Image (cartoon, rainbow, N blue to C red; front, side):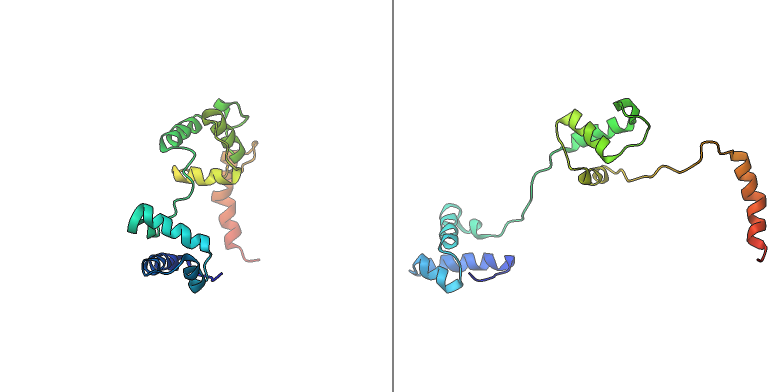
Length: 157
């Protein structure tokens, strides 16, 4: 069987119809272009059922989304309530946690790698919590930044 680019198949479908209308047999059309007889047969059947429109290359749409935009809006409302509201310890949202909330609310389960794509769709971005020691004294840090840090920068070693 011949190797054609996806863009070439529309022209092949048109040419198959022209040759069939000129009196060629399906098997001869298939041999002439290096196609399978089944492909030629399906092309001619589609042409009989749909006419010229059936020969056109359509946009491949892929699978429909599992959550509607309304459901995604509802999800963002629920996520804004916080992780503790949904029974998790701490306020950090992780992909598996968000997946559990989606499953609980809508009965849809995603691979955790796809949760980031969903959140990006609704305008959320990945965030990392700021790392800070619990016993840190804010006044001591400010004092160090104002007095000690400039002195360290100026002094040659």
